[in-house]
Image 1 (cartoon, rainbow over the protein chains, first blue to last red):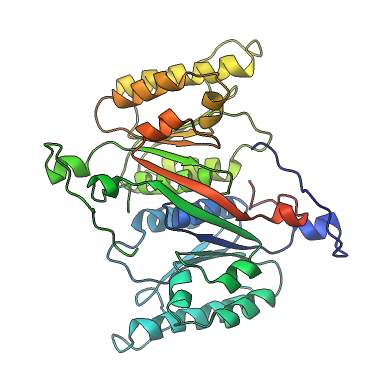
Image 2 (cartoon, rainbow over the protein chains, first blue to last red):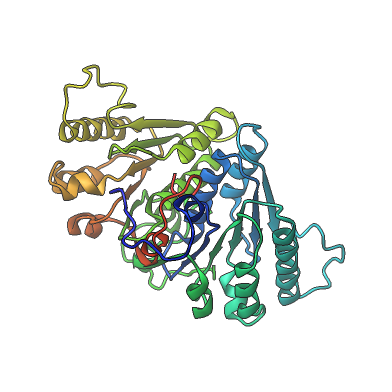
Length: 199
Length: 199
């Protein structure tokens, strides 16, 4: 809001309907708050459409996103909207049988391999690849490969990638990119994170 | 992530615990996507903490936020987390008995009056004042009054205000401000909004 209108009509040979239903690649980057929260907010819309949703958390965190995880699991199990599968690096990577043997880089790569398998199988209609910009930024996962996989993914599968320092090639390939800029943050005033707000 | 640490220790006479539990005022502004979706993502965390949540939609929209609304209502009714009350300008302003007589400016003011009553009564622990920056920007609601009400609100009530063109005085008063900048949007390439993504 206000209601947007396309500023150009593209010469891509697609009908409006085809264009409207085009699979989208979102990137939420920048140093401000809201990158992941906006991705999970988007998942609420997908859930409401009855879409199967796959969440992949790519950076192991002491606090994870427990609020979002519990909420989306309750929604997924409610029988009213779409389903939700929630995978965590090193925990919910349930297809990884080896335990404790892999370092974080290997675990991130295992997750990416699974994302590729799910995209090929069209397992989900919305993929939340949370913090996935980091392993690309760190060089653990090849950005060019990610771009190629995204470009060639079959069907109508929407993907949201979050994290600071999203590589330029990813931004170039994305349909929608939002940069969350920090204007002001409580930590600047000595505030530590608090329950219900930061996790 | 990465885990933040306060850069300064404030000389405010508060203990870390008191400071940690300080009520926060969030502002999500800017022309990019994600302002409202991040606010609703935050509501998932609040719900997971068992907090009562009040959502107030301040701008009447053809599409509202049906995905978020349905999801939060299912969560609120699940009995597992907090409760959710969802108010829409001109619809869910259920305390307004007159029908069709008020213009949008009056309806926005009615909503704000109710927010003030709820803040005074400590009805909710999280308030999502969605698109509330617009009526302030348009001069329908006095920003100085909003700032004063926010400064003097009792207890621990967190408030998120979304919308473009958040007034400077509001940004000054806020604890956390994120500016969602548009890097790229499908509408620039002639894409219209699509179900499950835009609503």
